[in-house]
Length: 239
Image 1 (cartoon, rainbow, N blue to C red):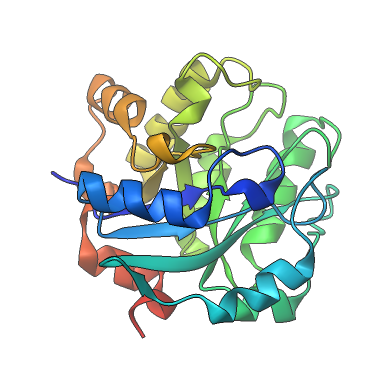
Image 2 (spheres, rainbow, N blue to C red; image 1 turned 120 degrees about the horizontal axis):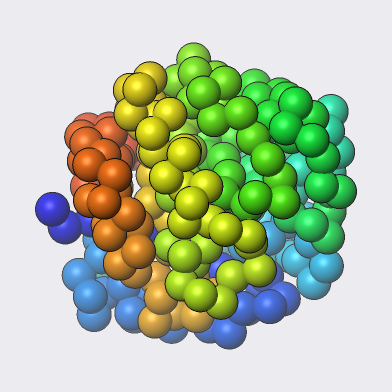
């Protein structure tokens, strides 16, 4: 199955990525990726974009060179009470939001604290994806996470860059297997994300595909390839 969307892509506005929006769109066009979500880092990340960046995304054309450009954001979870680094107005303007644990923003906690933080964030209006819940430094209760994601209609991300050998996240392949096993048990949907920080990685799900095949994870629970399920989880995109 050919993916139709990658919703975890960073531009130079994230501060530590290397491609412009137009370079990413051109690459998506060249590989036949119909939809690309721009999810730059919110201000809590060192070097991240100012809130004005996200408020001004309203000027972006919905379609560029035949590619649907989706206005997103990757917000930072700032504490174990589930506080994030953007306000509701910003989330309302974006078409979707990823919420993630990043070491510069939140200390490593124990399993209960980390899991509770992610579950609290799932209840925030506008959060549709939990980004890369695959870092052993942030231990998680994957059964509790999968059940909560299903209840809140939130997707858990299988992150391609976590498995590419360059990520700072710890033991991600082993942890992702635990995540997939829990999602399979509870029939919880997941989403592939490239987490591209350069245009050439947008739409790259090589490691995602390999690990779901190894885990015999049902592709019916992966939304990137299914327009009807993307519409179910991301209604704003199809308005």
